[in-house]
Structure formats: structure tokens, C-alpha cells
Length: 76
Image (cartoon, rainbow, N blue to C red; front, side, top):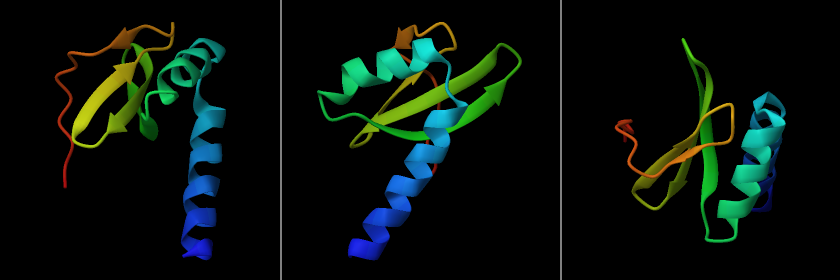
């Protein structure tokens, strides 16, 4: 269990390095509510951080704007 947690923490640290400062600030704000960074997707408009809380997914664009009504689909 401890080893698995370390792997998850290492994955998140790697993903955080891909985010802009604005994205990191927005992520910090919403992480207080339990949201966690799931992955970063490269789009034509830049990197998009995908953040989840249970089944709910929101996105944060490179300018740090949070989209609570994202149309992104999460695969199981």
C-alpha cells in the first residue's frame, strides 16, 4: 500500500511539472475541496489539466480558467 501511494505521488509530481503556473494556482485552490489531478491532455489550444473528484471531472486551461461544465469524457 505504501509503495502504491509513492507511485501515485510520483505520477502527480511529474504531471505538476507539465502545468503552467496559472494552472498550478487554480489546482491548489480546488484541491482543498478534494479534487486531484488525473492527467494532462495536449490540445490545439495548449495543455489542459483534467481534475477529478469521484466521477466528476473539470478542466483547467493554460490561463488557469476552471471549466466546471467540461464536455471531456473519462474512460473507465
